[in-house]
Image (cartoon, rainbow, N blue to C red; front, top):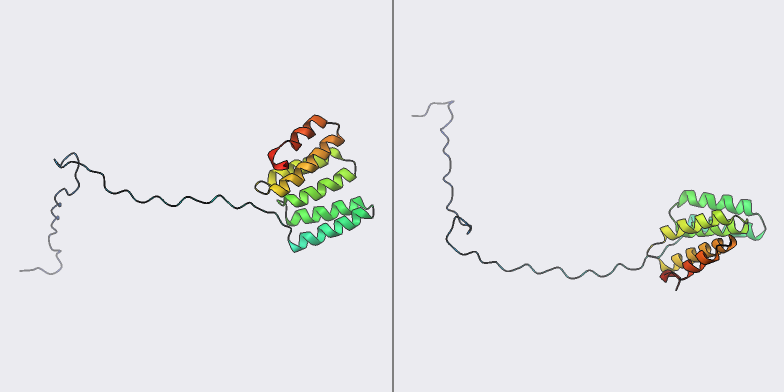
Amino acid sequence: MLVSGCPAPSRRPEPPPNPIPGPQSSEPVTPGPLAPSPPPRAPPAPRENHLSPATRSLVTQSRTLASRGDLDGASSTLDRALRIEPNNPLLWIELGRVRLAESDAHQAESCGRKALALASGDRGTQAQAGRLLADALRAQRRNQEAIEIERQPFMR
């Protein structure tokens, strides 16, 4: 007879027999088939840096200002571009060239080093940054360091 409102007594299920061979079993352990390994990955495609339409326009404007001798205007225009794309090595190279034209080789060196750090994977941009850096070092009469930069694999 069931009494309503009382739960039925619960029974624990019996554990299944040990189907896994191992220390409790006398069966020998044999390795199963191995899963096929995934195909090898292709090396990453070389990266190529580009300017967005907005920054491309600002670089064009900066070059025009620089060609007219307005290096301050060229510099401010590149600063605006860098606010849009602060991690674009091409903009740091442009700014470094303006700094060289302003005879500020130390700032040009900093721009070249920044561009080189950001250009990893893009050998063309690395080479441009390396040329800027070597030019900035030569402007500081640090010719041996410039030669060392020019010997780097990305410069070839």
